[in-house]
Length: 282
Image (cartoon, rainbow, N blue to C red):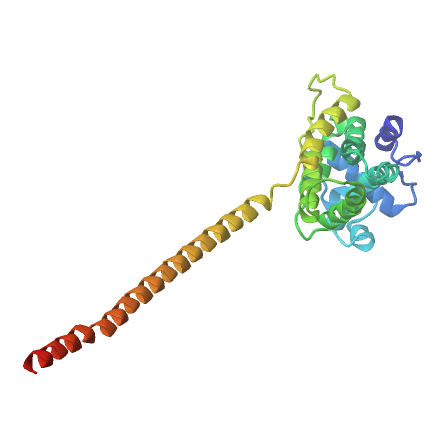
């Protein structure tokens, strides 16, 4: 892969087995190759339509004719580099069987990107930075990256068996991809002296991302607990109110009963007194 990639930049019109390298009569391919080389040399800012057309031995109208504009040309550059990487990711995922180990799924998602970064190297760091930079919403690059993520997520979700709702699992997969994008976006333009191999980088990234991807979901638990506590409290309050009401009703009934009993007994002394008075009179 490294040999083919070096051929891609040093001899842009030869073919290799990994990357599609345009022939001289392939105007769209020449434009993509020229834009890629300009990005590698001076960053995205160097890819004006005039500069690309001049490097591709074409004209600015050709960019609009073949791609529609600069945004679509940049998307073609990203696709030209990432489509082989995407196929590699999908092949790795397809080689797994459900339920797949979380670490294996994460490795399938991140290894191809780290291999690409190693092949690009510091001299092509600006190309890696373009690949990892967040795309502006609504652009052709954003649409391309979203399509690739949708393909990966569909395969990964079907393989994983973790304790998280589907929507949360998708967010976690986006976080994994965001970590990879961050690594690409911060690719050093000079050799930083790191001797870490691709395998070492993959192992560290897999260990970090797999732990988060496999974590037990706690999203709904606090809400259920709060709801349960609230319901219990409401029920207790209602029970207390009912008990108080029952006690009041009972007390009222007892009071009414005592009053009624008093009313029934009140005439007895009066009648007895009158009867005693009549007896004395007689």
